[in-house]
Length: 144
Image 1 (tube, one colour):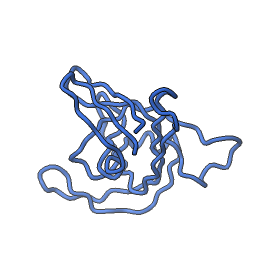
Image 2 (spheres, helix red, strand yellow):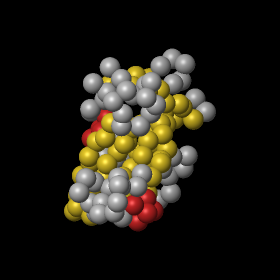
Image 3 (cartoon, one colour):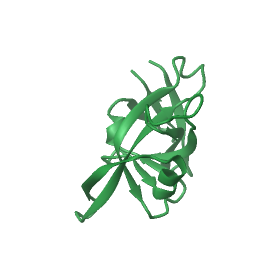
Image 4 (cartoon, helix red, strand yellow):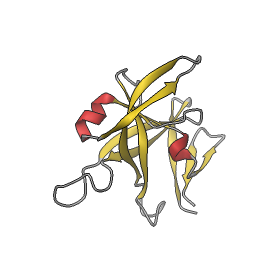
């Protein structure tokens, strides 16, 4: 099962490097759509992928709709959702069939600044990978 190892920031936050891209069919330029490299926090308690609205503007991610999102503490807020592709590239040795891509239609855009990471990867992507938190502080993702 191919996979790769991420790192933790100061031994505390599980962060991996991946990319965001336009959804399939949204890119009209030559070649592949541009990739935006991001530091992504792996959050097993998050339902959705969350991204700063700056990345939405940078990539031109298309708006899909609005959902009621429940945040920590039970408060609800209306969030605009966007479509994107999360790309795990890794190296050929770690991911022989790379890149692994996951289309996500409920990417939540927030105006708040995310500290130490650009994106939160939630359950809508994590449910498709095997995730291991290791005792040495590293994390590994495996793609079945």
